[in-house]
Image (cartoon, rainbow, N blue to C red; front, side, top):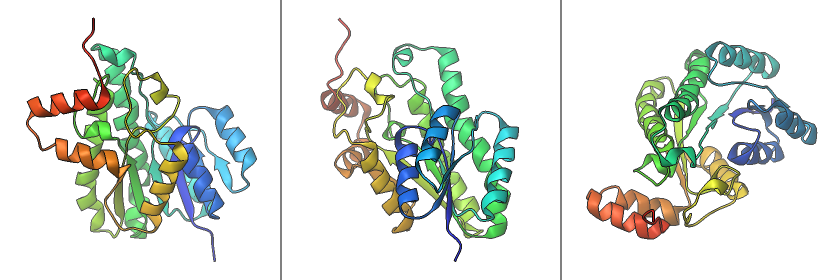
Length: 253
């Protein structure tokens, strides 16, 4: 029986890397992509069934080329996990147009580029899973998130739209909404991050949701995400007050 294969973008660090290691430990072929070639090489050297495929997701042509290389190497692709993202909370304290454009270019359009590269393959295969990684920042506005949050909200909408389009072909669209996960990116935050979890915790939750559960959205930790889902139904005035207390985000002196 042939091994199953997963393609992970954003796989050099953070959740993507932890998930690559998780799937590799379960005997899967793991194709990892990211821009940081040296980190990909280290990862693939450490794990026999992880292979690196450097990729800039903002390059549409490169996305197609890398997918073809992966497809030719493994012949079969079962899951795509598109998690490439960028965020600089220091630059998102103010409205920086160039920064916001760059965030959308990577987070939203980069995800669109990778989905487009595999669209025809999965529709012809009539099975498989395409996973879009969003964030709790996509539910409603959070501090220091003038570009990141809106880009994730766009991904939420995209995932719901694609759900209908791909379901007709027997292909699963899955949305992943992590809470606060300790990574080099979130270490830059200057506000309290409630229910902060490790990347290993995130990988466990995602693996379980992808393999053992047939659900649209994988969100965690529930102790935080369920609160935020509830808050999303509240009037803005109440939401802002409660979120301010939850994150302890204070007025600038």
